[in-house]
Length: 615
Image (cartoon, rainbow, N blue to C red; front, side):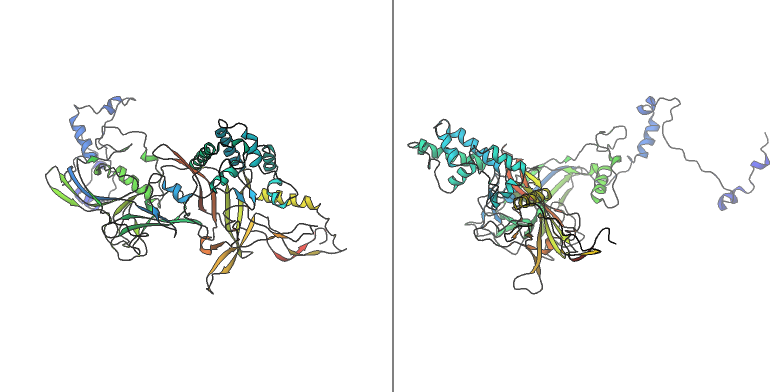
């Protein structure tokens, strides 16, 4: 057979070297190719096909070896200490109690039973009253009526200004009216906490005072177990809108002090703390220094595994519950990128050496000796060592040093006795601190307020209902004065602001001519045709009423930097968790979040308003 001349390339070696004639390069993948529409045999990877298996192993990189050995024996040297002291803000130092969740101790705030001289929390008052009547029934059923008479539920009077917070809202007024013949248990509880006796003023309990006292102690214990009430100063700082507290653990010389200066997230962990080296001890020094407990662990390392972990052998299929292909990280999602890299590249390079560390402890790993399959021993020091401010130092679960530079990094691990999961109830109070550039001030907008009945209500609705109720007591609104004939404009002295907008005006910090802070102020409540002198509009939330309900009212100041341009949202509600002993803990706590931007109250002065129809 003669090859056609058009298929013959003259001087082939020269053409290939200079690539003067284009060509098509085809790459064939080394894989099984079924000749039917079924893939059963191709997926079997039958063992008799040795060449195909070898090429597949080469393709998966199984022939690439590392000059390393697997660890088979490990010794770890570490030291542990326990947290011994607790200090809320600048209050007295107390003994650390790890039998309760740390969040409940830090966040706890007292329940507001009286706010603006008005009885609050009717639902809790009735709950405590029912429980007391159950306790007293076996002792003297005749005392029922006497307790209801001595500790009655408040009956609101619509003619009294103090009861406007009840009578202005139909749901609150109806609840108080329905409970008119019930017992107010909180009045008895406060009487007992003030040093009184349960049988005081009850004729049916004459001669049974000791038995009544025992039941009174049971009532107090039951209530304080149901609602965790603070007995020590609180860590909440109203002027910072956050919690501040400190913990300490003993050291051979002094103490190691952990401070949490900006806690408001709702879950405590290592990242909430810094180490304060400016103080040697927290409070008074301990009578005898407590040395850390040294521990030496000897064990076989276990390879780390997780769901969906890639198998190094290609014929083993991974767990389908984890789909790494469905992870879609952005270019800024460093955590997701690290997770994918760990799972897909270095998954089989990690080993575990477990050690059980009780909550409320501090551990410090001194080092680890690892023996591999070749008998080589390697001494490994803790990761993250170096200078604390070194920007190239990276470590997880380590605590930074407060206010220091060029200090050796602290390598201890803090395990606070924090709750695993905290259930948050609906917000009883919700305040939005927003900046108003037009009015050049900050407003504390009460978006949710507590009603005396124990329910919550939108702040704007409560403000409108209260103002409408007070206006109806005075009389209907007078008609607007008609404009003069031919007038095209009207002069308006100022606009009004809803009563749930509480002004926070800038004032100078005491003894400082430059630094400013925010002080709670008040707008006047002006009711048309009311001959009485206008009174200031007071806040209806306990967070904004700070200092108003004291025997001698004091002002409320807020650091200006705590309200950024985006504003800040502060909520208060019940928090609940179940501790390791099975007991449920319920307390009142505060959360803080970033706001949604600036706000506008609509407050304006000296306006010229166009009159419709006269243009």
